[in-house]
Image (cartoon, rainbow, N blue to C red; front, side, top):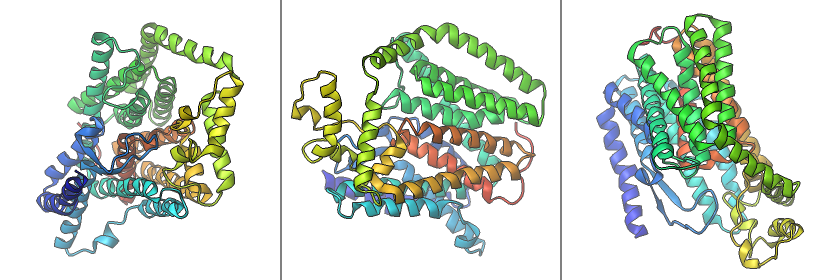
Length: 463
């Protein structure tokens, strides 16, 4: 079966992608529709646009096989289209189409891949390497795709429409199906909630700009509202706080930049929304908080702390390159990670649990994205990752300044706030290892890099 999957993957990447690229070259509307669809696709069930080669379903690591994604195929097609257009225009694409931050991203992937040297299962490390290296195609495609105002508007249409749809889906699951912690089309409610606020905050920043009007304004409002409803239905405390803090920050920045009726109206709507959230969702959040409180009263340390201790122990033993990319689930579990599994077992023993070895053959991963990378890729990999995060923030910061007089600058500012909160959220959630969240993040960060490449502002006005 894997031979068939390998053949299909080769046909997609080496056959379909170049053919699509030739079809998209010179056809801006097709390119815009493709990119808008790509952003919307990040909300679909993973099986709708990905499949796995050599899948190991029993493994609890962040990569369980060699992933093939239709998003990567479409990204490669967009890159081919840009290169063909540049050749037709007699320009040199590698010089004219440089992507800020892409070199740092692939440098981080290369450093992280070095952790496979001497690791227990080099093939597991290669599973992660294949996924993240190919993720650079999404980042590059987004940056190269963006050339004018209409490109960005189509991207926002795709994101806003997906957010609005997921809000309706969340309400259906909560009100009609009776779900408590709604997860939509995601693996878990936390990835869904993070996907919502990461996409909604840049859209909300565009809503606040006075030149956003007409049907586009209505769609963006629907997208922001849908994101809020989905986050509320997920009962994700961290995501709700992130969304609220991000929206408040954007309202304050809009008020400082250009106070007007729209900003004040959005402020009133936000306050009304907060009251509605308190009235409608308070019981659900109280129930969730009581669960957390009751578990916290039993022990001083929770599972997250213990898993971070495992990470710290791995880092202490392998400080330079880590224990191996995608190896945390091997090294923190029996039978191959007895030393680190004992940290969890001692904690359970102190709580009065009877220890059976077979219960520790598939221990969970640390929830912190940064502790995960420190354990798996060491200080070198962690430093490379942080450099790329810094590069994305600097790119959108530069874009927000260069485009400050346009609605595109508002989008860049919203993206800056969203990415900053997302990176802070990574200290307690490893969401960016999830395929859909990783794809959305790289597409949005790529848009920020594309805006940063532009030396002149986009045209003003959006309706």
